[in-house]
Amino acid sequence: MGLALSDALGITAQGLPTLDARKTKDVFAHLENLIKDEDVGKVIVGMPKSLNGTIGPKGMQVQEFIQELANRTNVEVIPWDERLTSVQSLRTMKELGVKQKRKEVVDRISAALILQSYLDSTSSGSEECEAS
Image (cartoon, rainbow, N blue to C red):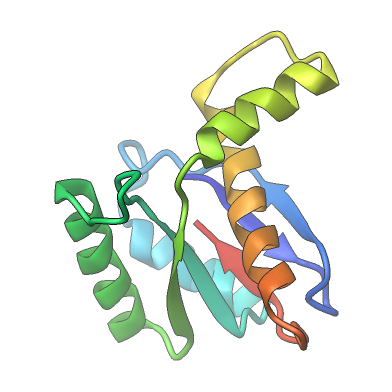
């Protein structure tokens, strides 16, 4: 799971180390701690959609994840279209000369791209945000 935080002014997104949900006992507890430690005001979650904009089975799982995270925290959880972010991530890696295409790197860059897209769409991004 890719993670990113915005700067305090909500202008730029920085990728964080990825979270391996398969190896993490309680993903929600990990995210709750991160939200508390970083004083996160909103969480932006990448919503997988097909190219025609419909939500498939993976999107349904993400909706359930969003609901659970919202229930467990006191922050607003916002789904954000993640279409083509992996493609953008791979393109960015190529431009930067990163030869390894490890999933962790792609997920980290994708999380930053998703959060940056959200920040760019808001005129007053003054709250610190996280993307996953």
